[in-house]
Length: 101
Length: 465
Image 1: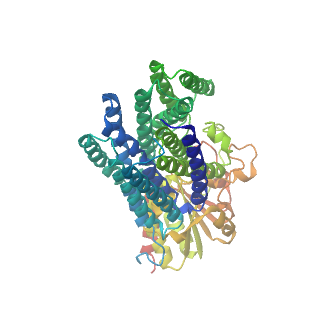
Image 2: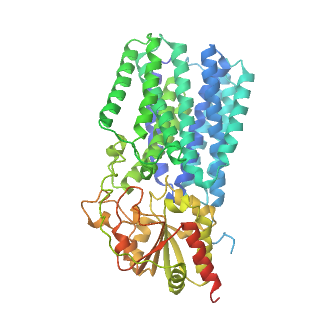
Image 3: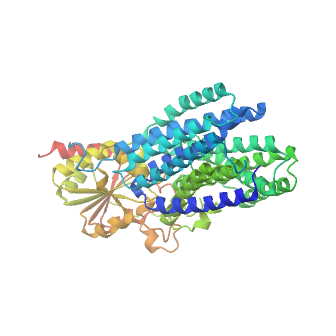
């Protein structure tokens, strides 16, 4: 399937993405740690692409069934994750923009 | 995949490249509440591009089944996106389980499609993918069950627990090694998954509710790493990047949480949490505490210039955040400066208190992190503790015998007056006595957080304008 050079490339990408992740996430305000977690959850559900391929290629009934459940699980994470992150972030208002009591 | 890409494949790869960039921007914009909502936008566009690009792939024949699955997932996802803010920790745990479930199922399907024709490296990554994924599925379900209080929040421990856990993991790894050497042994694969699933259950059982912020972060990291492993298996750079971003996010949060509880990161990684249950029976002798009524508390608060409110899990349980907002309004109207001190592990997940208070429309610039606000307590007239316990326990500073010794705390005891709203004198979740309650400058306000804050507000508005 993959040659060893592909694997080495993949390791480089993993290493670099890990560093970017650390540097970017380190700067996230602690205020937003909960929405950060629900957002990364939604982004992580990008695993849906692998599941879609399994279902779409339909190479065996087993792979199609497992893929189907996987697509459902990941899609619910995408939809639910983005929805709740958006709801949470809408709530964060500074005292300049918050409605006066 | 050959090195010469066909035209449509190049387009798909470019779409994935753009999606990866959008994901990174998405997280970058989370650095501040003013740009954070762009982050969602970027994430959503990236996701749509990636899914669209995947549907274009050569070899996809069954679009109907994909469509059904996408619709079904959306139907399940919408209510999961609409849960109450107090239910966000268990919702998050549940979504870690879903994400890991997807990864584990895809890994299993790939194994059965490819076996026995799997290279050693590929089989190693695939094993990492399904073991990490499997333990995250059941571990997250256990965490969600504890947070939803379907399962007991108290740590369940038994003799030799660590040994059993270690043994299970060792067996799973042994099977993985065997499969790497003999990838044709298909019958062994289900056992590896089953053991990973069992390990996930046993890993979370001994963990108490107060340790949940660390555990949720850690499970987040595991889910990300298993997705990255899946990226190696499928040779998908997009997945590797998304998994690495999620994995590093989870790991950073676990490091922050473990620091905030004075645990080492390795201590957290190897699941040695939940050991704070000792010393439950300490301090049995009746020491005098001073208590006050809502009327007295209201009088003290309205006479103050500077008030710091310290919220904790008890506020979330009592759903008191909206009453707290009314208190904030009433005091602000009287010219009292009110701020909120947020301990990193207050509540059940990272940032839990911030979300609840933001939901109650309290401006986020009033929410101050522990390190920034701790120096201000000596100049503070009143520190009002609502449903927080261990994060205010001065024993963490002074008593080397205390299980939480060394944990950074909010120095509420240094305020001129401390008021603690609490149901009773029962020690908190971790079962540790809190010497704060016996200090001379401390007043106990006994009652339900929501009801008590409500009566303080009534006193404040009922009296003179």
